[in-house]
Image (cartoon, one colour):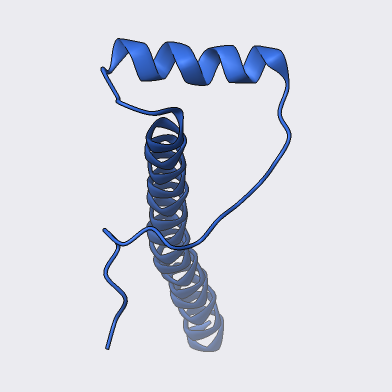
Length: 90
C-alpha cells in the first residue's frame, strides 16, 4: 500500500542562511501559509515539479532531435545513393 502524502511522519533537520530563511518567510507570508515547515514543503514541491518538467522537455527535445538526426542521415544516404546510381549510368 502506498503511503499517504498527507501524513507527515518524516523529519529533516538542516541549516540555512539568514537570507534564505528570510526568503522562505517572505514566501510564507505572501502566500498566507500557516507554518514555516509547510512553506518549505511547498517550495520543495515546486522545485521538484520544475525539475521534472525540465527533464521532460529535455527528453522530448532529445527524442525529436534524434528523429531529425535520423532524417538527416537518411537524406545523406539518399543523396549518396543517387550519386552512385548516376555514376554507374555514365
